[in-house]
Structure formats: C-alpha cells, structure tokens
Length: 195
Image (cartoon, rainbow, N blue to C red; front, side):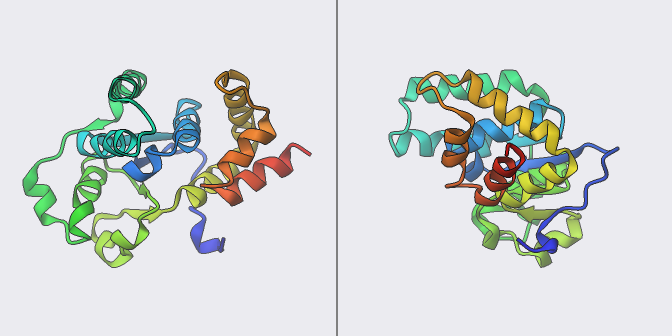
C-alpha cells in the first residue's frame, strides 16, 4: 500500500463514508466496518439500492436465506438509522462514472461523504469523482487509514468482535485470518499490534 492509498484524516473531524454493496457483502468485513463505525471512527452511509445489492447477492449466492438476509437489513437500518440516504434519478443522471455505480456516487454527493469504500475501484475513476470532492478507496486502504488514526481503538473493536462471535466462536487471530481474505494489510497491522 502506498502513501497515496492512505487517507489524510483530521482526528478532530469524523469522516463520512459511503459503503458500497460489495463491502457489505462479506460477513466478517461487513461486521468489522459496522463495528468501527459504531466505535465512532467514521459515519457510514448507504442508499436502499446499495443495501438491495448486498442483500440480493447474499441470497443469490446462498450465503443467507431470504428471511435471514431481510433480518440483517432490518438490523443494519436499526443500528444506523441516520445512514440511509435517499437519492433522486435526476442526480444519478448527472453522474459520469460507470453506469452500474452512478447511484453510489450520487449517494456520496447527497451524504456529503468524502469517501466511497468499494472494491470496484475501476467504476470510480478519480477524474469522474473530483468535481464532487469524493474519493474511492478499497476497504483495506480505508481500514488502514482508520488504524493509523486510532490503532488502539481499532484493536479494541477487533477484540470485541472476536469475543462476541459464537457461531463459530473465534479467537482474535482466527478472525484476523478470515479478514486477511478481504483486507490483508489491515489484518496484518492489527495482528502486529497484538504481539
């Protein structure tokens, strides 16, 4: 990861970020991102269309039943009621990034979010985001940026996440091994903090 991949975050100003459906899909990554938000390290945002994409993929790839996926959506909305952003088609039509992800950029514009956290970076070229003062960043770079901001609190979040997992129960290192699939550099940084 280069220095350019790390966000310059002012510790006195809580950053806001739109979470794309692709980062809400993997279970342990989603849990980590939402727990870090609950810890106050950033404000998350999404639209119904973003949530629909995550839920549709969870059901379509048979990761969850329809009932469990709908229950997850309800829990996310209850935990973060201020995160839901409503966007209009007129604004979506003004976006010039990849057509499949214009609603995500429009969500960031309405939310006044500085960042879109996504693994689909090719759909968000910097030239198409610059006018809106938005950057697209991978979940690994995003979590690493937050780690640099407050490594102690991040480690506490991961320890707490591991402590509440019951099906299956996981140690912190086992959780980090699972997170390495999605966010390898972040998992490595947290692991090295535990030594």
